[in-house]
Length: 148
Image 1 (tube, rainbow, N blue to C red):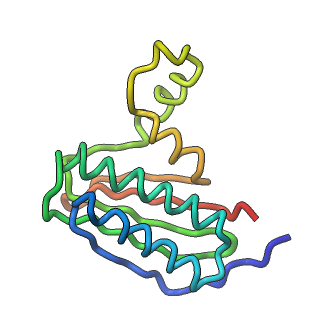
Image 2: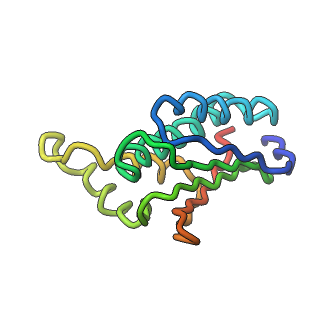
């Protein structure tokens, strides 16, 4: 049985939507995990999710590098890491296509379209997810249960 993570105040960072900032977002996740005793496996899962969301926001949401914001808030509760990921790109619910994207995995590799499977990765790594469009922001709340 793993020890519950302490409930701590959330940490939030804002990044400009530039692929060059992707490493800073990953460093934020790793530092957060290191300061809270979150193991390397969970830190890597969190970083992978952030990298997927960040890249999609820059490339598809904002349509390239720009100075618009991406905000990431991280916190812990019990055995879980909570994340709120926000961008001000046009409305897009990444969870809406989860079932369709998941079904593509059953297709032969040659028949699959390029891309679109990142949402499956995020959905598989997160214990729970919720999306809302609020006040001009895409908001995605994720909970990641510790892998132990």
